[in-house]
Length: 448
Ligand SMILES: [Zn+2]
Image (cartoon, rainbow, N blue to C red; front, side, top):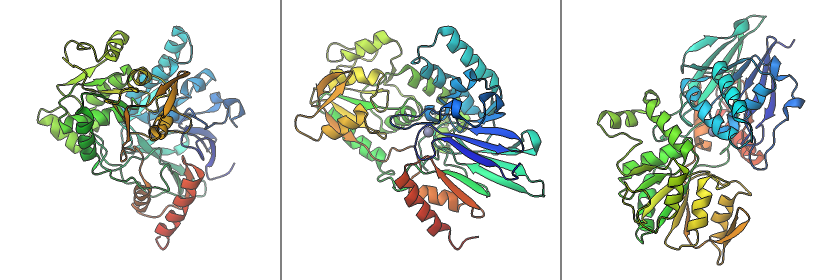
């Protein structure tokens, strides 16, 4: 057996979705993430893996986004009986996220319940920044990655027969500094091998600091004519950041969260206030809950969703007193499905309405088409096989990425006490990896 751990990438090596890496050391099989591929990306089918699911000892989950956890049910169905290791907050988010994903698979209630129970029984939440032991003298530690609530990077230490040890860090998805609600990523320890994400390896985010001002300004203008502002947003992370910023702006119009999953996740974010950053904690201590405000409305039931669609009639949700002017946040973030599609079908043709895009729109998604074709006269989008003219104004807001940009990735690596022995780039497209690779060499050269 080789002394140093062997790493095999089963997904997400040169793509930004489908993260899954196998670490083999001391006769143990350790999996880091088990995510679904999205859009045009692909992952290695489980039957082609070099080990069987039943032979995997540990599964580490860096955070609860579907492209990092989405294949956990399949792994369990394939015989996985090992331990699932993640942060406490990820443990809390795991089941709601998987339950939602499973609701689209056509599995029976019993199957879904069995999978939920299995995930719950196999998974364990751990503290950040504390060292824990696995079998065979292997140690691990989770660092806060600042990407979404509960996100972590994982540090492993493998004792070597010849004495000494070999250390590996998996960055998972790294967040930006100054993300609302969340503390900035922890500074990493040194390591022999760093497996680093590279989503924005070739780019820096513009206007991140001023984004709340931009939001305030264009929201004011958008609502002036009595129209509706639609914001397609991911349920986990982005929705909570938007609620936080709309609260800071002091939005006077009703804001509807039309997403049962988004609402469930928001409740978990609210409950787990020990993981918030200083600013969010101070707001709460002053009596201003940072992710709740007076004119924020939950649209949980489908019946209320239907009523919200008929917004231009009388007040849609009796308690809100809304008369048409409103902000509606709904998923999915790229308009590939979910309640946002109903809203767009209803509101795209009205020039008083506005759509704010706050996330990356992948190729081939309706979101990408709306951004692109709204710039052209006669632009339209196809939703559920039907053609809709885009008359609403469309804005793509920059500065809302949940991933560290090139500068932040370089800073994070450079903040290690010693430069890593080796860096393997994953979770990025070829161009981003090439550019980041060069920059890393330049930045770290001359350091020891
Ligand atoms: Zn993520």
